[in-house]
Length: 309
Ligand SMILES: *Cc1c(COP(=O)(O)O)cnc(C)c1O
Image 1 (cartoon, rainbow, N blue to C red):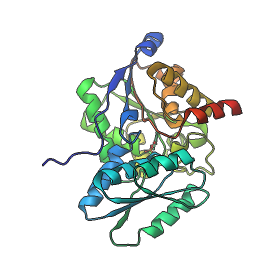
Image 2: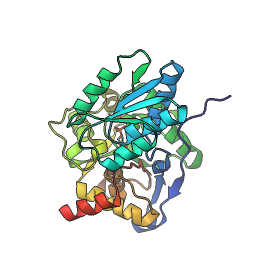
Image 3: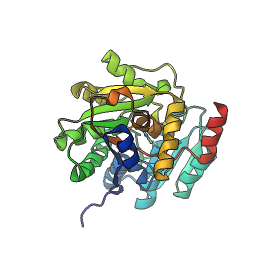
């Protein structure tokens, strides 16, 4: 029997209203439609399958976000025990989504680093494995399938927009671009001002560790990107931009109005480029936006953020 993937092929939409308004061709790759709510299941799911094949019978991850959800989904699908360690700041509705996938939620630590230290301790048992959220070659290989799917439907676009946290999705996209020979496609990375670890690394041409993270785009909150992500960024002459939290939120709202789908601010950072017709797009006619998705924004949380403005 062929090995099935845990992710599913997602649709590629032509964004009619937006394309007309910008006088460009804008495409949305709808990875928000993955069963775990974000692209994460592509690569993280592949790593979980690999670990299961290696004989591991218990997955552990530290994440109150989409990586936690993806591992929980993988565990549920493969009937493998899963523990998701989350910091106290994790919204109850996110904890519930993880529990609904029959994973055990352990609340530990006030910030992610503390949850992560605890998760590492849990993996001392021989059949237990720690699943990293972004920094692993198998994860990049899995994420690269997103470009294989796009390449079946459209020719290489002029530009591709991808949100960057630790750079796992970005590494996958870069790999996918290489293996599908999309050599004319410029990659543009998106972050919020408060999570600009990739933007700063590209400017400095070396890895930069942020002193602090300050943004509602929690899925982009990696203080430092993976070393491989910087390698790819320099090799592909990647350009980068950052937007405010408010711009991300407003892009989420416009996207909701256009498609009926609510994505989180991390994804809004990528969408903000097209919804604001940002200058960085000027030289490009056909643009593919990776709609990475994400489950961390509820309508209630959205309204709350708007009131805080
Ligand atoms: C994880 C995530 C990101 C960032 O991905 P990295 O692989 O860490 O760069 C962006 N958007 C969403 C919705 C995510 O879940």
